[in-house]
Structures are given as structure tokens and as C-alpha cells.
Length: 203
Image (cartoon, rainbow, N blue to C red; front, side):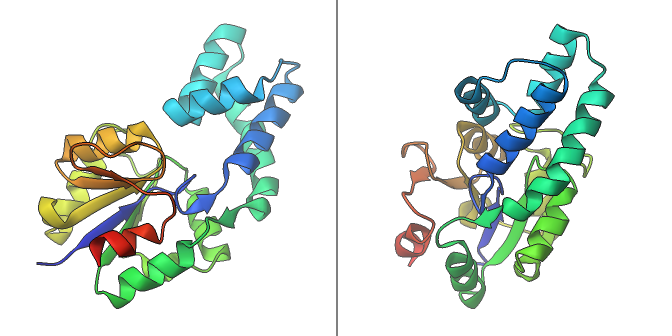
């Protein structure tokens, strides 16, 4: 039975939170808003940047389009600072050599394609779904169910790799297993300290 990995990006394959937070800080400064780094980091880890900006728009009466435009400008400059997480390339290689089909499902926008190309890891993935692909957002399982149906993936041998509780919830909603860098082991979720532990667990 074929195995499949569906990867989250930010905080999972990509060491990108510092770049994201820098971009958000510049956005807040542009509009003269107070930026509490720890509070905002906790919020985007639990929810998403999209939800953060949506709430900010409502609270501060700033058009969401303006917030997104300023942030997009800042993001383009920050993409160069994004690096791979420790062991990311090695685990992608390991999975490829083991015949595991690999996909991406991320809330990140279509700028994800440029980042993956820049880091030279696009070739590992059969298909990449982003926050701009038109699917319901996590924890709704729509995007994962789409991949499972299209590529005939089995729930027993399909894993969603993430770093947030939201990622575990998404895997649970889709009826698949998960590996997570921060959420403790329970049910069909297995906590890992580093990405290379995935290979040790699955063998």
C-alpha cells in the first residue's frame, strides 16, 4: 500500500516565522500600530496570519486590502530570509527514496511556489496546495480529502506533517495520521522533536 506525506510549510519544512513576524511588524509600523511580538506569534500559531489581519482590519477600521498590500510588499523582501528547517532536505530525500508520495498543503499564499523554487525543493512534491488554491481553510479537511481522492491515498498510510494544533485537527478531520513538532502524542498524532525522527518512527 503506497504511503503519502502531506506537508505544512511554515514552522514545519520552512524556518519562516521570524520572516513572517518581521513582515507583520513592518505592516503594524506602517499604520502606526503597537506590535506585541509574543502575543502576535501566539495568535498566528493558533489561528493564522489571515485571521490576524482580518481582526486587525475590523478593530482599527483599516481596509483589509490595504493591510494585505503593505504586508505583501514587505513579504517579498523577507522571502530571502526564509531557510529550511533542520533536517528538512534529508527527510524529503529519505521519503522520496522510500517511494513515499509527497504533497504540500499550506495556508501560505501562492508566494510559496517562489520560496520552494528558491530553496530547490519543489521537485519533491507531486502537488502543492496553498491558501490561494480555493479550498476551505484548516481545520476543514477539504484540501486533504481532495488529494486523497485524486491520488487514491489510503487514510492508514497518509500523514499530515505540521507544527500546530491546527494541523493535528486538520489531520483528524480528514481521518489520517499526523506527525507534529509541537503537539504531544495522542490518538493518531505522533510528536517529533526533529523532522528526521519521522524516518526513525516509520523505518
